[in-house]
Image (cartoon, helix red, strand yellow):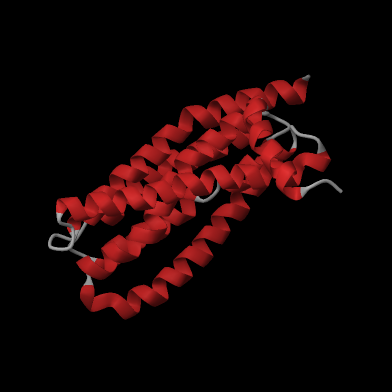
Amino acid sequence: MGNPITEFKNALGKVIENPTTRWITLAGIFRFFETFSIVYYLPVFFQKVYPLFKTEYGYYNAAIVAGCGFISTILGGLISDRYEKKNRMTKAYVCMVGSVLAIPAIAMCVLNTGNFYFSLFFMAIKYLLAECWMSPAITMMQNTVKPEESGSIVSAHLFYLTVSGCVSTVLLGQLANWLGAAANPSIYGKLIFIFSIIGYLGSLPCFYKGGQEYKKYIKS
């Protein structure tokens, strides 16, 4: 068994060298830019905009993230596996469609500041639509690398994604402070929406390119 640190360093480079894993990782970087902004600042948005519903949000948030996120992940994997033989771009299309459909959902969630349950409903819709991408994305990468390298490649992939998410969190926090979000909580919603748009739209061409490279690899 080799040195795990050395293997991880090598994997960081191999993720970029392989065209499929490169594009899927770049897509994931955009998606984690969006994901971390929501994970860390959507609770702040709800608690600041709807301070009388803190307890309700705590209960509903856990149910929505766990329930809708889980259902979305499972459905994304099932749809991808079922229809891939008909179209090798299916996995990429699942990732792309989920990203596109999540845009109006997150807009309704965070740009509305007048009705707690309205925002909460579209938060649930967002999680139900948007979280379908991880399973097909990881599978595309695993199918285009050697089995013995699969674990280290996925670890390197997640490392890049986590760095992107951390940058997103720090940047949104700094912008929120600079724009005075503490005194005007609706600013949190606007920033979350902007960061989400960057993540969703930025990922689309990357998922498409990743899907094209995956299709080319499978057919070769």
